[in-house]
Amino acid sequence: MISLPLDGLGQRIQELVEQVISTREPALIASAEEPAAVVMPAREYALQQQRLALLERIAREKSDLSAGRFHSQDDAERLIDEWISGAA
Image (tube, rainbow, N blue to C red; front, side, top):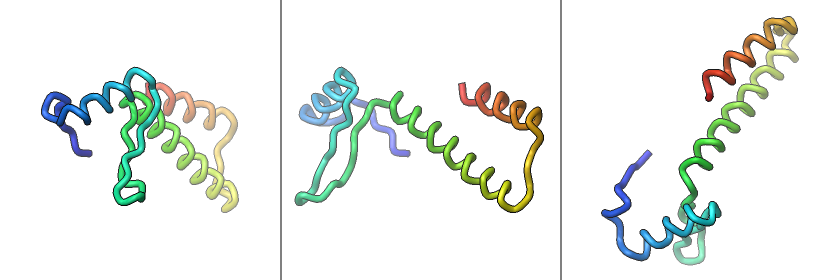
């Protein structure tokens, strides 16, 4: 991921980032009417990445279940607890 200091950006971009932070609403940046980038609060991005990882894990586990590979209830609860404590 690219990381830039806020004070190194132009004034309009700084204002946009400050607005995104204060409102917690993402901002879409378009180029020639096409979406080009999204600016969003870093915390929201981190939460989104955690949710995505969880959904990917669920999809893998569903595939394993369909293939006859599965865990006991106790093992599943332990794995979930490990994942949650690692994500915190």
